[in-house]
Image (cartoon, rainbow, N blue to C red):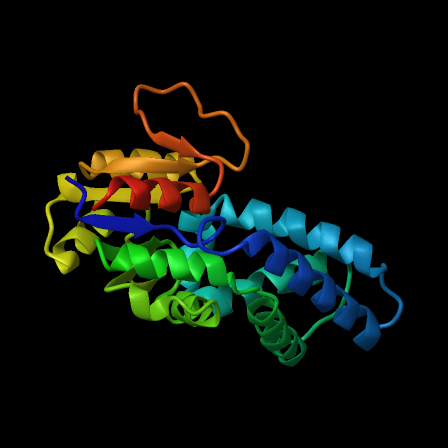
Length: 239
């Protein structure tokens, strides 16, 4: 019997790609406005996307020691601009990152229908967030979409370095909710981090596919196109 549901945030509860696209575009335009003579905003956006992917792929060896979202964003933006031959100082990068953070939060669009579904879900099972971000940032984003108060537990990997797919971050949610791992269902859109991580913790998993086909692995997961489809079916099946 499922007594608790854990959720990832990015790409599940929040359309993070849309806010990321918006904030990177605004930040690229800001760089062009403030620093003449460089490439246009499209080139900056492309360079930032490449640098971000490269550095995040080496999180444990490059980014983990920086200490959190703000420091990581400073590093990624500074490396991007230096790679484009901009001569930037810490003050400029700090101003850019402050604006970037504001644009990213402001671009998140609340979904009232999802909030209502989660409110109904919270009346039946315990809800938790299991994220690899930082709790202060993720709590602000959940508050932005009006659902923070529904989650009894928010566990975030950047707070102390215990990140998905490590089983411990999932097990912390179970302990804080007062349930056994086998009574938990984790919902996420990353097969490696969410599905395999939950399985290692002894939990069942739901994979939000966004139209993708699940990989061929021994681990099974229930597959839904989006989180609304999952919640609707769960509510229909749960007294």
